[in-house]
Amino acid sequence: MYKTVERVLSEEKIEYFSIVPYSLCKEINASIRERMDFQPKSAVIYLLPYYTGESVNISRYAVSCDYHIAIREIGEALISALKEKYPEGHFSSFGDHSPIDERHAALISGLGIAGDNGLLINEKYGSYVFVGDILTDLEPNEALGFQPREIQRCHSCGACKRACPTRILGGEGEECLSAITQRKGELADTERALMVRYNTAWGCDLCQSVCPYNRSPVMTPIDFFHRERIECLTLEVLDGMDKETFSRRAFAWRGRKTVERNIEILSAVNKGQ
Image (tube, rainbow, N blue to C red):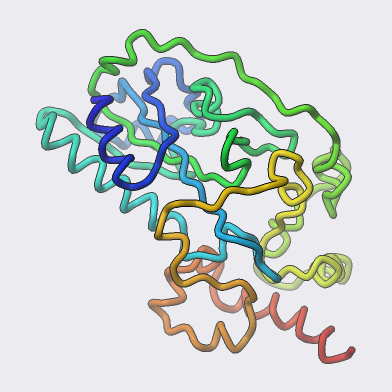
């Protein structure tokens, strides 16, 4: 199984992966696993770097099209190759919403260290990575001798906590700025003021921007993230998206009205200057 996974991921320009026995994974959502038609025995964990350059008023992860699309496409390629090699096997692809704590599985695999901002930090790509996984009822094979790594942490320099606009990383706030931009409905004046102050129409990267491990971010080699980039989200850009195009963006899940509201919050200030 390892060689097949290595070949497919190499073709996708993905270099960091591991195969972890399911028994060593931290299951956080048993209901998802219970809906599967098999009992997982292995988890293929891989990192998907996404950094393609700086952005103006939108989180770097949302500059490109929705990363869930990339994870789905990579998962389909992996499963297709594995089914051809192991027709008796069963497979399911996940990204974000998985039965297991994907970050934990990556950490015990040595694919990165744990940052105080709650993110996985990879040695090459910093924290600008997504984690995807394939669960299967195949035995780990070469990974039978897998030894979980002791989870390593960052140096706790405090930069991310000092930069956090809502102080949630320091245990003082209740919600991060990224979550505020993603909330539907009316926002409080203080929340709108935070968005204006940090010029964000979607998300927040401040805890990543100040992180020493992200001082010289490496561009992703994955073509998907270099296509259809949006560095600055404006009403003109949004209005130029038809329904299908909009649905391919990472911010689409909250609906067009939420995104419009955010842009208008920033636009109102700019008009008043």
